Length: 249
Image (cartoon, rainbow, N blue to C red; front, side):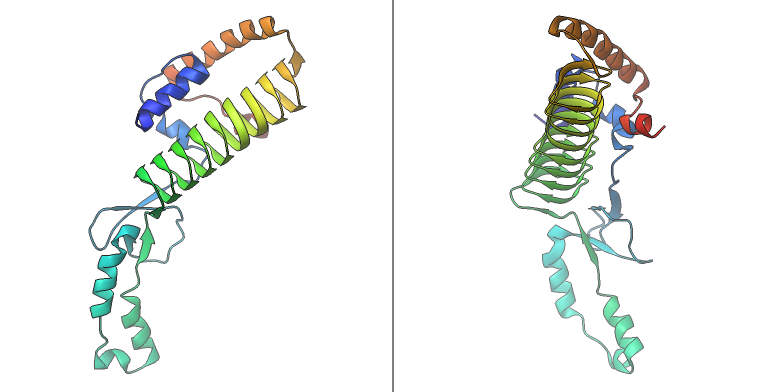
C-alpha cells in the first residue's frame, strides 16, 4: 500500500467511499499546515526539502544524505594567501563552504518524499517533524500516528483528515483539540467522546449532533445523511469548510 492507497482507505473509513486520488485535494489538505520548501542541492541539483523558510540571502543547500560528499569537498578546501590578509577576507572565504542541510530523514525510514525532520517513519509525503509514524501526508508534528492527512500537532491518532491538536483520536475529520475520542466530525474541545458531529466543549459524551443527544439509531441515520453530503461536496469542490475557519468566523 502506498500513500495514495492509504488516502483512499481513509476516505472509505470516514466518508463511506473513495473520492479519487489524493493529488486532487492537495490545496485543501495543505491549507492549514506548515509548508515544505523545496530547494536545489548545490552538490547534485536534486530537490531538498526544508521545513523552515528563514535562511539568509544566497543560502545554499544540500541533502542530509550528501554529507559524505560535502565532507570530501570541504576537506580539500584551502585558503589562499589573499584569503587570510584580514578577518573579513577569512570570513568571506570560509563562508563559501557553508551549506544548509535538508531532507533530514533518519532512523528506520522509507518511502519518504518532499519531507524534512522524519525519524523511523514510512510512507510520508509533504510533511515535517514526523516520528515513528506511517501513511502521513501534508502533516506537521506527528508522533506515533497512522493514516493522517492535512493535520498538525498529532499524537497516537489514526484515520483522520484535517484534525489538529489531537491525542488518541480515531476516525475523525475537521476537528480541533479532540483527545481520547473517536468518530467525530466538525467538533472541537472534546475529551473522552465518541460519535459527535458539530459538537463543542464536551466530556465523556456520545451520539451528539450540535451538542444535542440522540439515540444510537437516530444518530446513525442522521450521521449517514450528513456524511454523505460531506463526501459529495468534497468530491465535487475538492474542498470543504474548515473547522478552524468556522471557529474563528
